[in-house]
Image (cartoon, rainbow, N blue to C red; front, side, top):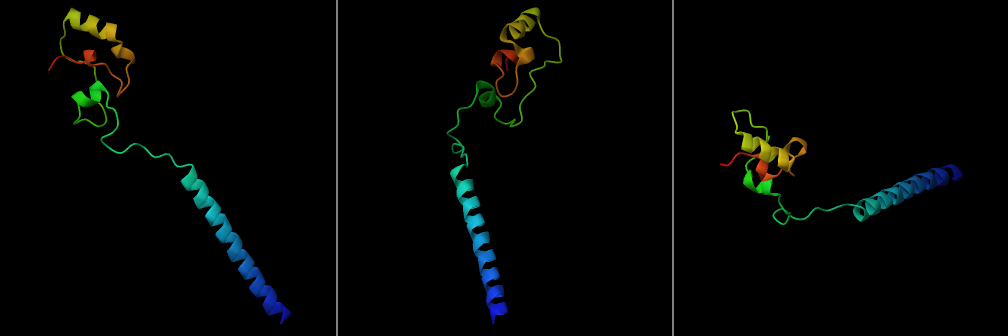
Length: 95
């Protein structure tokens, strides 16, 4: 009789401990979760608005011939250090 009671008690205690740990994990997870703003309410950068069809960015490096004034415009805008999505529109040639 004592053996059966001990086995039942251990199983119940183990189940209760597991339930408490699971509840604590769920409470911590929901309490510390960061929720982004809904889609459409985020502020887009000018480059993201200009190139909305390119979700992974657009390379501002122009591979064709450019004028000296355009190269100066890119240098003034800091295009060599710009990282998507914070790329000034001055880095791109006019469309």
